[in-house]
Image (spheres, helix red, strand yellow):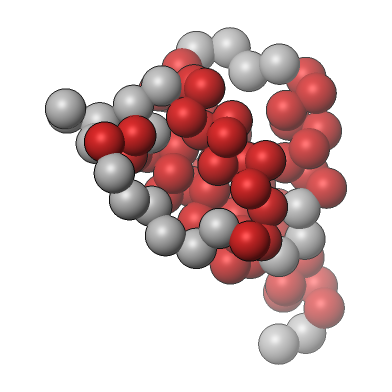
Length: 83
């Protein structure tokens, strides 16, 4: 994959994550947006998109965000948006 294609995909994933967070939780702190734009791993961004869509609360998503690359499973009642 060419660098500019990867960069475009990263931008799209970042914007998707921000959009999902705004839909679920409303306004997002600027610091969180800055953190999101520092992520340069597509797998991490895609995991966070899933976490944002399924987290039961903002605090659960923030915990997942802080887990970084170490987290790879979204389990438990913290990720049941209809629970």
